[in-house]
Image (tube, rainbow, N blue to C red):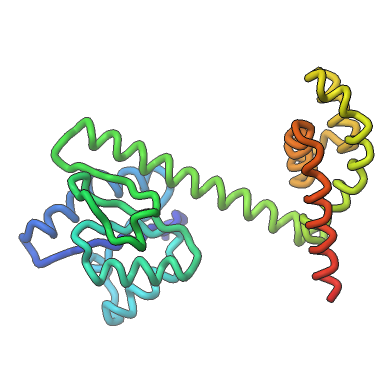
Length: 240
């Protein structure tokens, strides 16, 4: 049994030997499958799943359980939009694709980043595969970060926002005293101060976050007060 993640394909399938089926098969074979397999995903499409359940039940299960869904919205197929909407409601990763010659898309999906593809141009084919690969890698990186934060939160039995709020409170006064140094853009001094304020060069999620965050707020120390207030409001909300 494969340990790969699952990628479910939502697309207009059409009848056998139709142009719609031909395009969907080529998109699956020449773009989606090679990219997904390379990144550790097994690819499946509703019409090629061997299952005793009804096709509708199978699709719903795939939309709920798959690690990734790629939806080809070419042709404004109502079934595709239904499945796309269902997947979006799960708040799990979904990637939209559409043929490059489609000039307009329905309003509700037009603002979502969509990868355009061409099947009859080798150069464009390579470009599309690279774009899809970058998008999937971005999704995987986001998932890793989210899992790390959740794991650290469980380990510490405390919300990361609470930790951040506490640390910000401790450094607020120090930042106000260091405005002159900051204004001089002395990078070595700033780095030393950052390391001192965070009191650690460790690799925990909180330490890494604070190192990067302090670098940013040194550019505009006035923003720290608003963030501290937000953290305090969050703590008050938790206590209710």
